[in-house]
Length: 488
Image (cartoon, rainbow, N blue to C red; front, side):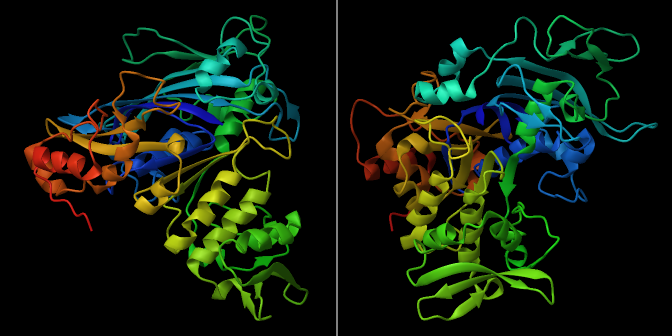
């Protein structure tokens, strides 16, 4: 479970810090940088499986064909040459290594830091991204409540937080100066036993992967648990063609990020009745959702039966219905990702049914009032949207507002919390949004090119002692920034 993420130098995320709860919605107009946050999360996830350069080229291109690694670094007067990540997250109490052996971490609330540097091409080598610093340390149980930020029950906290570690962390960086390399830092990998045993030393320069991304055995259980946690972070990009496909008997029985393998997964889960009931919240005339087995073709096909007894295979269902079905199946699968990111869940859904998909997404998340177990898996959901209908259907506790600022020839995304929420109380110095101004936030949609030309910053959406109507507030923004607004 991702609790906090601090990013510097990644795309438009020049310097941002975000606190996440079980369910989080990032809201902002088109081009405000919402998707860049998801890209950063997926970049961290890919670093646990791929070499650094390959993870970089996979950003927005899973096949890694056309990635421009320089474009990942924040642009201003030129490029910022270094990007930094810091993440607080909670890992599972038990994980399996690549040989199916159990590993039990000594700490489950962890802090991970990673610094990467861009190195331009030279005569002897192509451009690359270089590992500069990597650290993995623990957060004590005494500090857990403050670090979480959102209110939780002790039964929840006691079921997820373990800390038997004393002293140093699990990965550390020894900064060194060398005449041969500008960066000659050494990454140290420490055993869970603490001071016993010498740490493994890995030169940062020349390392093709992160240290965390190279651990695949139970010799380092906490580092392995951190890797497994980050590997479970998933960005769903549900593709209609994948959603419509039947599955062979030999198909993987887990819904992939593109939506493939719904039939095989539902067959394994045996959750047809619960998925049928969930789909009925979207479509009034659903009788059942079933998986049909074809022995001759040795395949599974997803079939929806309506109240009039007509049957519809997945290939004939609408995109919106298929997206909803995929989420309903994922919700039943405790083996699905622990962090699920989804862009614009309202796509393909009638406005009158948006509440149904939002309730589904919120029901997928962990209940922080109960202990974590198989009936209450530690799972969270992050969505983004520019839909006022979605905002109207959510509590302000779940919202983070995103917008793009322009200054001195550069653009940067900032994230603002809503006042009088748990996030709004974390940092009193952070710009905040008054609850009544949330919808107005999405109405500020001026000419992007004109804004860049004038290099004006939008005023921060802060509440004042004097209460204003939404129209008065947006008119003020319009006057200050010469924006054209539509009150339709």
